[in-house]
Amino acid sequence: MRVLSAHGFEGGPSGSKPTYMREELGWEVKSPIMSGLGWSIASQTEVLLRSIDAEEFDLVIGSSMGGLAAANASSKRSDSEFRLVLIAPAFGIDRYWGGLGEEEVEEWKKSGERLYSGYDLEVLLPWEFMESARIMSWPEINHLTSIMHGTHDDVVDIDFSRRMAIENKMVDLYEFDDGHRMKESIGSIGEIVSDLMAR
Image (cartoon, rainbow, N blue to C red; front, side, top):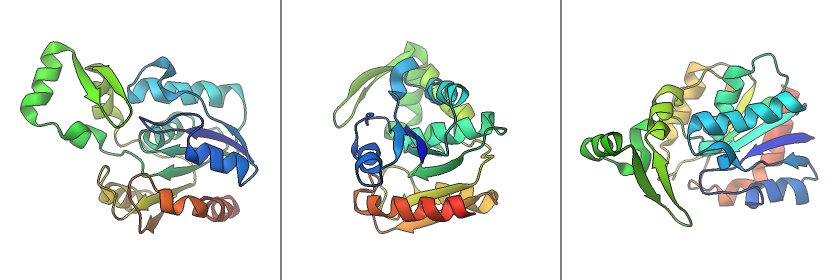
């Protein structure tokens, strides 16, 4: 199984999900640094597109913001033959990013940049981050797709994934008793991918 893995905003190429796929499932996993070209959805989608254009993959799998980038890559490469697994994908990211109110968003727009401070990351985000989020938060998925999402996700509302599954016949949604990081559900990836590849 040749896999292109897109980690989340604060994740990395050696995170728990790509490591699990390599070590437990025995898959050949390429996991680029998603911020290699910048921090926006547009730049992170470009990271994936460059990999997709350079080699063939059976599966593209993305988590959170990486899941949104993977969905956008699907929208831009409908002629490529791969399938998608999106784990708690960040659909609608422009609506909830950082819990910002309207005034804070306007301040960000005026200043041109805003400091993001998360669990293990501090980065100065340009306004372009929000501009591309507004354009790319609801991509048209063009590949057979399975979404894994936790019903206790307090970062990305599971209703966004439910909406995508209702509106796109290529998308199946699997709901889990889990949170945003999906730590308790990682063991289900193999079975879900097996079912996806058989579709």
